[in-house]
Length: 206
Image 1 (cartoon, rainbow, N blue to C red):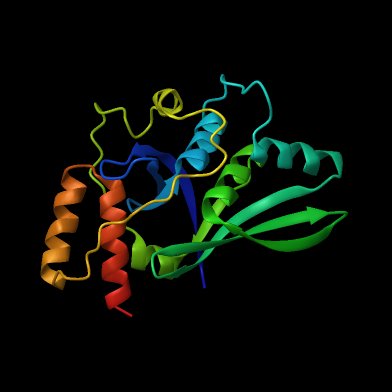
Image 2: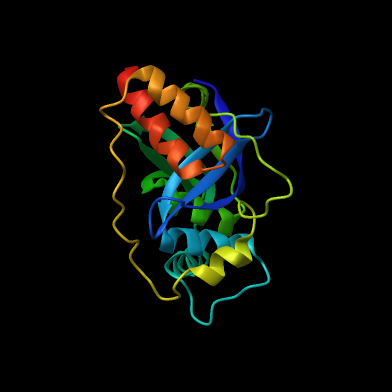
């Protein structure tokens, strides 16, 4: 299966859940976006890595991992989002030490937070992007999706566990209703809601 390289487009505030954010990944050679719902701690860690000028007073968990890896000459070569099951993305971290390559399973949010710290590329498989990717209409005048400093201002420093998210259930809607709702969510730039609706559509298309 062919790999598609992704860039981080930004982080969007959740409009429906407290403590939840949507991480927006964008394919390098295309227009599709891959929104992934993440928790507050992961959003904080990714935003800090994106905003180079901000340094936490003490190392975050992902910073600690980076320091540990540097000490023992472990390098993250790349991150691959390799599976999507019931709306949950599974990722692998490709590491190397002494020219020996290892593959480590990881949550996608953690894998991306580490990829940023190692300047490692992020990939997904073409079939996953075809299944879960959506076209988002991003308003260049609206800065919420790329305002890492604003994200950081709203996050609680020291919150080491993401808040439990309660997703709205879309099981009672028809496919037509879901597609209409998806289009409306995209128009409203509600990326987190769009991701949830997309996941429900993906479940039914199996």
